[in-house]
Image: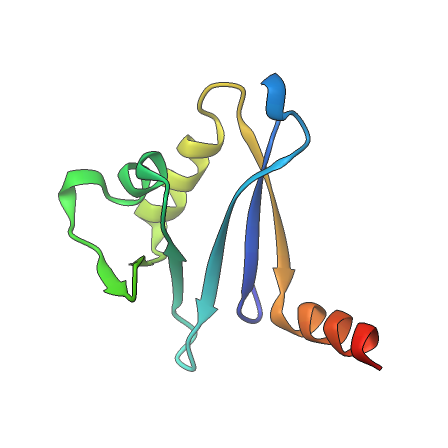
Length: 103
């Protein structure tokens, strides 16, 4: 991941098949460290650290550094139940899309 952006989780099956069911913000800090901001998914919180760590918060979002353990947790979360695919949209793509609409 080269820049900050939004990662959406798309359901692989069930009544939400092919629908976005959750979204998180990924921040790429100047030092290259990735941070994931999310709320409203206790299952994802558990996958990102569960009871092993108390996440930092920003407003009402839980904030997790994305290290190897958290990335493995995301993969486990994606494989739960019917499963999820992820789609990452970089901030620059979001910004250019918005500017095109406003032009």
